Length: 124
Image (cartoon, rainbow, N blue to C red; front, side):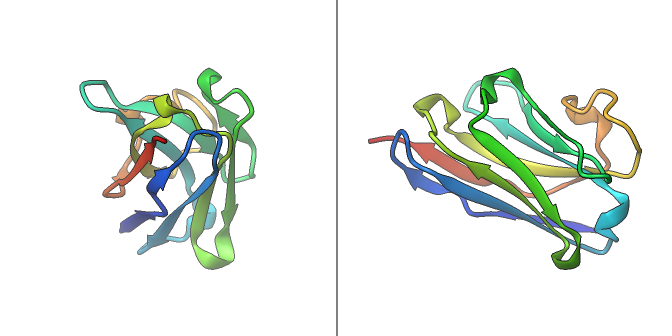
């Protein structure tokens, strides 16, 4: 199983970015996907989560700025990030788990597979 996160880069405050998480070696339909981020000196934290049935969840700090979606035909999950802030600067990771439900979705220990991360830098 491989998860390949991509789409990071340098973006100005207030700008937009779309991250992608391409999955291989698994049937994405059967997996829930979480996006996490880790800023320097901070713990990894859950950003957003999408269940197998497309129900979505977001951390409070997202405040309606991000949208998670999935395209099972392309084995890819996306994180559309709008109105980004400097505090969104971090390495973003995607992770997969086969369990149904949203139990502890923001806990990184609850996932079976991880991607390598993509760096998002928000700066003017």
